[in-house]
Length: 231
Image (tube, rainbow, N blue to C red; front, side, top):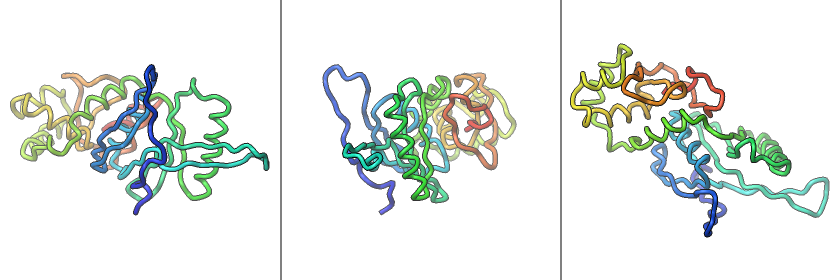
């Protein structure tokens, strides 16, 4: 069994007046449900699911426990996600907006980074995704399921957008927008066609172009350049 196939080591609490919103997200990458505890975590799940290099994500994958300086009090931390990339590289991810990181949290994140380094895993603590990128990912995620794909339409779309042009103009050149738009959004999610997801929200005028031969990862959106988040 691969590590990314592990179950959660703890469940998500649910109670009246709860301020965060836990739930389950169906990841197209693995065709499995992955848990999240907040809208911020959900945005990062979508970001990871849209990365071609990501092949698996596990929520609440393990718990670390340690003592500082030989003291009796133990510290514990459960990272948010374990991520497997196509080349086999592993990454552990904690999701916490910058303004919510308390000194005790920072110490736990630092200890987790050290533990991950010792076993050869990457580690990252991420915060809020930029609002434009988050909105675009949320929209495209509705079209992530393979059932949306219609190969004859997909082939026509790739041919039409071989020359960059406006989204709706290219769709109309292929056929009825009601039938064509879902396939286009699926191709954008799959990175078979490319748009700038950070600079502006998707619209009829959004320029669609061929996907680069080698795409980078979708960035967090907080300070990433448009070139690094074309999908």
